[in-house]
Image (tube, rainbow over all chains, first blue to last red; front, side, top):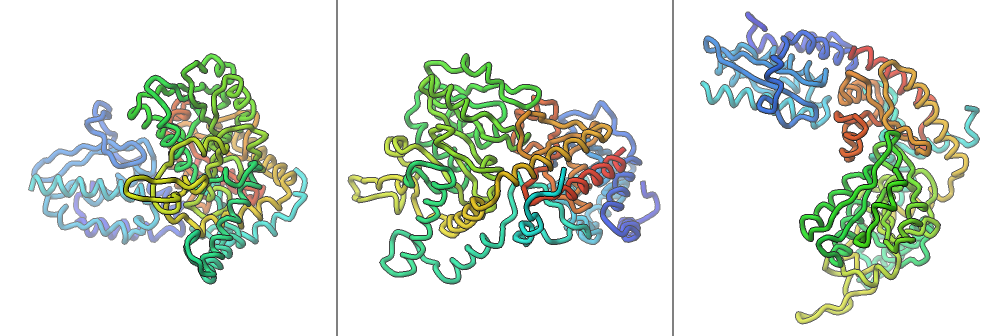
Length: 140
Length: 409
């Protein structure tokens, strides 16, 4: 997705975009709209094998390595969660394993997301970051 | 609806937590079926106990222990009065409804054999399903279920045929936490009595919306959760008819529930102490007394009319929003409104309402079976009102739902 930006720059861009909004209603609108831009998840992968557990809503996830970079796919039946997946992908998609491992999940704090999301949802988001990091660790 | 005939502002002023902003918006607290806010008198009662009277009960000869014991026992008498139980000994303090039902499942369960039947309803909270499921695993009892109609009412026509000579207990809720349905518990108790079957009522959602009379209902067991009735968390009540408390074995063993202990034999204390092992939630019981004193002094006729007005306005306004479907349309309801918006996930709606300062619960409300049955497998958004909510807050909810719906479309 973010072909030229480094993960750090992608996080900074997100932070700038978030700062542009006065309140969380608008920020959520922005997150929802990001989710709508997410490439369609292959319908044949909407199964249990691709289900990501640990979220209150349903989340499906898959990945592949191409030319040493990760290609992430994901979706959710909840619009905000889908937007949060899109947000994560802006940071982690098309990265090398080293880039993924160098990018700490602390940016959720920087965006104010961790304190704002309900505990369940923040846990789900952290779970997905951990998953991406463990994939990077294994395949490094 | 005309102006409320009581001073709603004065009531709201007694709840300090209601007066705050959330996400820059005035808090609209509509999660009262999960837990209610606490009035100043309850907060003060707990504070005063810790500042002046803190001691363990039923033990010391010293003054503080006597004061703490007196207050704890006064709380028991207060509960008796609020439930119109015939004797103070019939009031057992527990952690809440969940523990009350687990107590019955554990102690009453010891009298059961494989093949004995427990009859619950499709409207139950998990707290009135899982303890019986555990007995199914442990003993082999059979769980049978009173069906629910598409409106979310119990299908009482089906009840008599479900009662057999193996039915040992009927366990149903007074008010459904997920839908707000008020069940005709006195009628169910009468049917149970005709068949000689004892009945337990899960009353967690009953007392918050008006007085309860266990003798009028004519039930064997009735449960309460303090935190749902403006009292602290971690304190609740099991009401049981005295003969049950004499006959049933204890739930837990420990201090305070015995008369004599040797390594060869234990002689239990009479009820209710027999069921209250260990140091209880003393300050919780004292807070519960303050809450129930306060609750009993309210003008319930006016408050019920106000609650009905809240439900009516919320129902009518939300029904008018395109795509909204109300889940649970029983004729008799407390002001609890469960709904879904076609094509939107309840968690999304809940999050967008929170961003606008409105607290609701989303999901399965610990009542997965009934929501599956009513076609809401993702759960619902539940706005649950207390009498301290205002008609303006209903309007704020409706505006926020409109906005959420637009954002998600």
